[in-house]
Image (tube, rainbow, N blue to C red; front, top):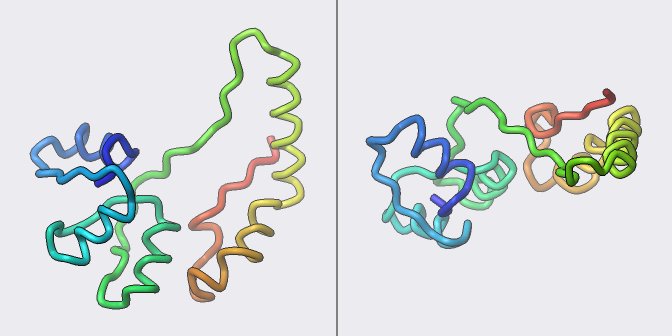
Length: 125
């Protein structure tokens, strides 16, 4: 588990009895999994699918945890910047920009059998 990650926060809150071994970097946590110093690893699906593809002795479990959306933050009261960010996000969503990036950069790395909608959430609001 990466210290302070969303996985760390989720497990600490929802499964307080879990014995978590915490690391500072993904590479350290994944090496611990590979070395047998950890039994499982909770992380963003892009990281896990890519790593499992490089390490076929491991698999990503089919159970999913509700996605936690990422969002930009703007200082309260900065309406001009907030409006601009929202406008740009809307344009990108309508263009399906993140799906295009998935196809260009991730499809081959993660495998053609995966559904891009499991990785990409577009918004045109």
